[in-house]
Image (cartoon, rainbow, N blue to C red):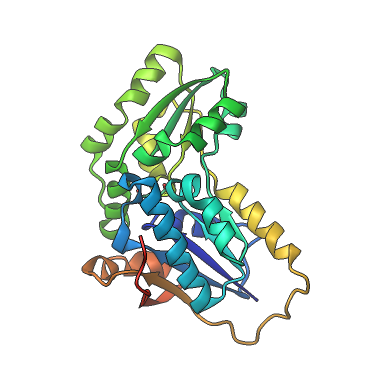
Length: 277
Ligand code: DGL
């Protein structure tokens, strides 16, 4: 049995959990899945880098101490592109970060015109620029940083409703790039966005490749599981999957149906130690 913690500011972590629970290399009835949303500090996309580093490091340390997961997936591009180093230096648990899938997008794009859809934080990170310089220097990148799109995904998981007019407005720069320089590939560089994939397809049918990091993360998790010195025997009783939140609010109840899909029937509110920021 392995206990795998998937962490994000909000429901974006569920897009990664969905892949992990369905990928052949990582799915197992012998795993316990912990999903944590740092809803008290949501959204991450508008936070300053220093406060994000302190917050994510502190919350993950508390989670490590309380649950002792075998692997932590930092299922958030906004946090991974800035806090991964600090988190890894502080925690003893292996931490897998989720960062923009710019390399595969550059390989897939035929027009060498790529859209980067992310939070305002991820868009402006030196880490993201470094990925572009390294893997997509010969591509034209259209950057769209949107906090509103994160909210649309949060609402969608709770209500099943999507504001298509707002979506249309947010995607305007990509539509423009399709018309003017044949943009054919979009990187979904925020874990919230794959949750909206059917609506994104509908809005921009011209896009040939929507690229996210889910499958690459599953390969990495599988690799980490194989690295464990002695694989523990399958447990007779696997503890139930748990959803953890950093603040109790009405939005948690509204997520119940979505969480059931992940076989998560227990929710807890984390009792965090005072966080130094
Ligand atoms: N899901 C997060 C990401 O992958 C961002 C959401 C937020 O802004 O809090 O970037």
